[in-house]
Length: 479
Ligand SMILES: Cc1cc2nc3c(=O)[nH]c(=O)nc-3n(C[C@H](O)[C@H](O)[C@H](O)COP(=O)(O)OP(=O)(O)OC[C@H]3O[C@@H](n4cnc5c(N)ncnc54)[C@H](O)[C@@H]3O)c2cc1C
Ligand SMILES: NC(=O)c1ccc[n+]([C@@H]2O[C@H](COP(=O)([O-])OP(=O)(O)OC[C@H]3O[C@@H](n4cnc5c(N)ncnc54)[C@H](O)[C@@H]3O)[C@@H](O)[C@H]2O)c1
Image 1 (cartoon, protein in one colour):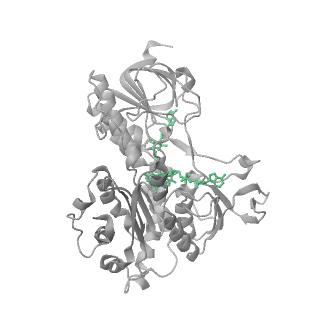
Image 2: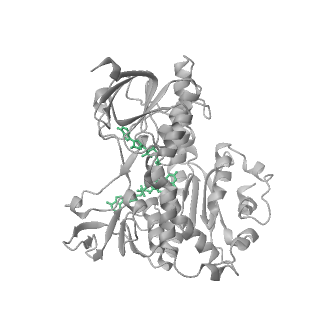
Image 3: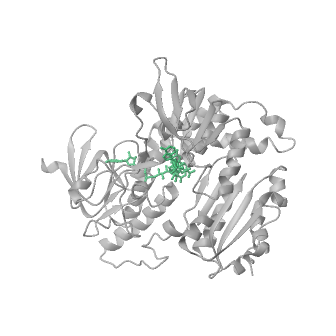
């Protein structure tokens, strides 16, 4: 190796997804020289095969569901969606799968980019196989942050390669709606993609292994989404999975289900969860097992590696698989790296700047289905599992004047989970049209540990859906 190919930086970040970009932005802002290594597109899955394209596909579907029920506006949205225009907008929102804009942003932030595949080769040492085949050896004075994200998990089905199944990547970037689409898995990807492709013209069959959709959320969320998907024409089946599948020479898929039923389809999407992108990043060189999720403490430091120089941030640490939560971790990790580089101690008090407490206390998430599902903190089931004494308050959102102004047939439910001893909100779920924007208020209530009696003084404007807070308080959240 020539000396020209050895480069030293304060910080090396592997993976330029939303999380890696934000770690680098924070460390550069703290005066630390930083290089980001990226093997595909700067921006990661979120920009090209996840958040951005999926939300661009879903926005017209949800907007039309509302508009079709607003008197006077309803005739304007009759008829099918303009699929070509929706897909063109999706392409635009995904940067046409080019990363020029994000590369410019990196430059403007003073972050260096090295294109290639990065692997750890020792303590603070990374080897990069660049796209032109030239290996580059990187040394970090202070830290290496692994931000390599996750990929779609696939089941151990016999002959799965020959099936050419869709994963989240194909489901978000497909050039046209398949005639018949089977979706396996009823988590967030499964229900969002079922909502989008059914509305764009596919006949969707959604297979849930459990007895309902969105099994990790409050049960009423999955029930309302099921009802709407069925009304939209999707075939939603519970308690089933796929036991065998084959693609015929003509290209048709023949799928056998666990209950013995058979289906014919044009495409099959596996949306059964994620696997870490950690199988080929040199984990063995630092004594870790390849292919595992990386365990960190609340400062995002990899606990099994001594020396406080290795960090794992975003999906790859499996703490909370959302872009916004990974970016929150990135801000914390950046502050931790900067403090350690300056030789300062960490403030890891409960809500201190060096502890990602929200990962365990208040992870917000929105499922962009019809109706929307927005949740943060604990569900009733989770609170009961932790042994917390709770009060549970439910409110039909459709009873509010603001909801009826939004659309006259409004149906939706809100639930607060209250810590009975501390009298603070520990969980909130809202299901209904337009509830995504309610979520931040609940997130502030949880992270601010605002006593519910104080919430009584936070007055929601009339007539808005936020008035649901008042009804919840009137029903007993307030003493
Ligand atoms: C269909 C779908 C929809 C989603 N919608 C939302 C949403 O609406 N809102 C939300 O908050 N979250 C959403 N998510 C989750 C979100 O996409 C992830 O949480 C987020 O992308 C994680 O960011 P990350 O930076 O950790 O990983 P990624 O975005 O996966 O980025 C990791 C980057 O690292 C690179 N990389 C990996 N290994 C190496 C290596 N060895 N060398 C160099 N580079 C490497 C990869 O090429 C990639 O660019 C969605 C996920 C899916 C699948
Ligand atoms: N709007 C958003 O913010 C958004 C959208 C999409 C994805 N995401 C993130 O991406 C992550 C991954 O989403 P996902 O839907 O792939 O995973 P998930 O973990 O949410 O759901 C996967 C589902 O598949 C089921 N399953 C697992 N193995 C199966 C099998 N062999 N057969 C049938 N069912 C099986 C699981 O029981 C589970 O219900 C989520 O955790 C979420 O955080 C977020």
